[in-house]
Length: 193
Image 1: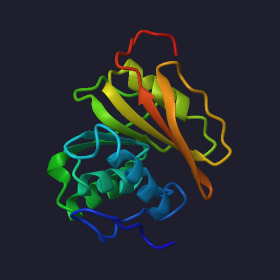
Image 2: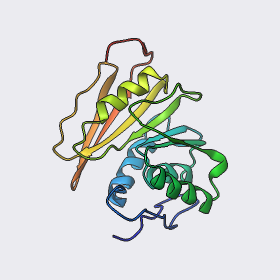
Image 3: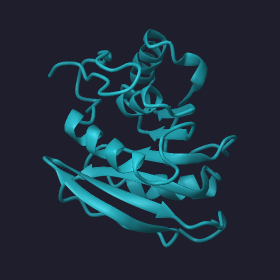
């Protein structure tokens, strides 16, 4: 597999480092292009947003967002070795000042300092981690009013939807599936998930 590249924006064509092994599965270019096409044509758009990338891996999605004009990136990755590669990718593209890297479990997020306008959740396929990560988003105050959440899953993977979200769009791309969720305008972080 060749290293992923940034598809559009100011870093278009730049290749990203991906750690060796099977821990990281960068989203396919076709899938990333489809995701950003959906996001750019819905409020809040990409320009100036706070973009939260959970299970960030090499950072391909988050760096694509910065390349396309996102104002800030918060990336969460549990594996220290993978996070080191993501940090190198941020530095290589000169984006370290606009990004914050949290090394930790996306299902146990700390309290948010900046609520996100757009969240990208890409847990390992068939892991069942999407629902607990979404519960953690709500509990930690990570979602701005009207935020969009994009969940990448295996094509046939089951998905339990919390009452705080509604499905806006679902699309399948090869082995993956994208579910675009809209967030309720106000969230009760004490609600049972």
